[in-house]
Length: 235
Ligand SMILES: N[C@@H](CCC(=O)N[C@@H](CS)C(=O)NCC(=O)O)C(=O)O
Image 1: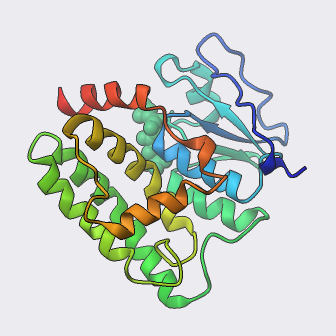
Image 2: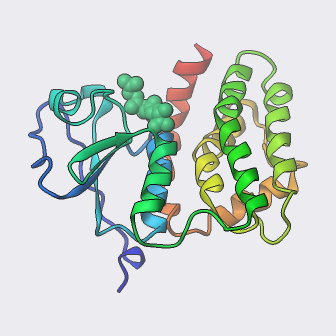
């Protein structure tokens, strides 16, 4: 059976009491936290490309981080990071492209130059999108963040050969979904607001992404997210 068809048993978190794995022994390791949206992007890529056997997940407890992580693995001390071929690379957007270019599996970008150009534009906007939504929490969230969800709704209208940003599933969907997933949960919980209401493309997009096997096991835990967002963005 293909690796992707088997439900993966996730390894436990490594914390300050854990020994490091045998670093730089030729194993490719993706250091993650299962509730981190940036790590989630790369985790989806790894699953979508069918690299469960090639890229080993190593969860790091960010609240009680092992000292060796900063000292020996990734001086930035963040997740995600990828240990591959004797070096460590970070930054989720760079890692998406790195894994797509250096590993087997379906390509994450189509060949069409118009689609590639639109992908760049959308990916470049994602940090602004998240920043504007987070900062809306202390203002008028439905109105201010509404403009951002409208941006997605309109972008999803551009190519009509599928429900995703570029028509077919691509890296653009992977870049946005971890954040949209969290915003959907939090707006519903905190303000009883359905971010897909009046936004049929966004509703369809979320519905279709939820059918993707590579994404399903990576979804965040609302019981972790809701208190975390309250203390981080509302307190
Ligand atoms: N720009 C980075 C952001 C990564 C990031 O902020 N990760 C968080 C967890 S969600 C982290 O490791 N935080 C630990 C810290 O900042 O000390 C990326 O896209 O990979």
